[in-house]
Length: 184
Image 1 (cartoon, helix red, strand yellow):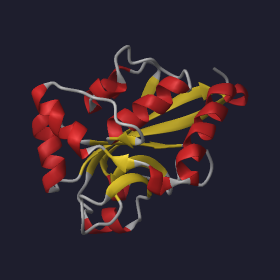
Image 2 (cartoon, one colour; image 1 turned 135 degrees about the horizontal axis):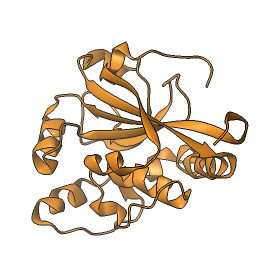
Image 3 (cartoon, rainbow, N blue to C red; image 1 turned 90 degrees about the vertical axis):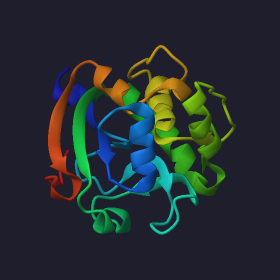
Image 4 (tube, one colour; image 1 turned 180 degrees about the vertical axis):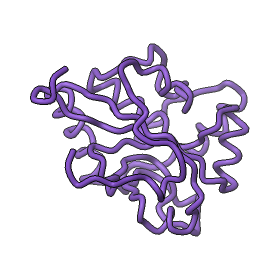
């Protein structure tokens, strides 16, 4: 895909070492516990579901994180892998449209704590306007026709993002040390 007809998006997987992150890592058996999506390599807007305040992991839902935001300033040893993926202009436009829906009314969308806990027992349910980070990123990737995980988004785990073809590793290491670019 040539640069003129494509855009690059970034899938960011992290592990912060917080108690909720450790719980998720234990649940999935994977080295990363959180997934975000960025539309550029400035990483000042990483879309996901997570805690709305650093102090309270139970006050959570749709959020826009930043590498230099309050959370990663406090948990500055957060490990990550960032994948870059080139997608067509049409898919990129659809992705932006889907994200805008969440941005317009972020308080409407909450973190699916009950759904996360039910996954321990291999029970998944679809709860309106609720996601965990993986189901959110998987859903907008599915709906944009970027990649089909071939399973309900509630079953997608952080490791499943490794299966997306044609992605490249952009960066691995501490998230706060990630090289930031002003041009995509």
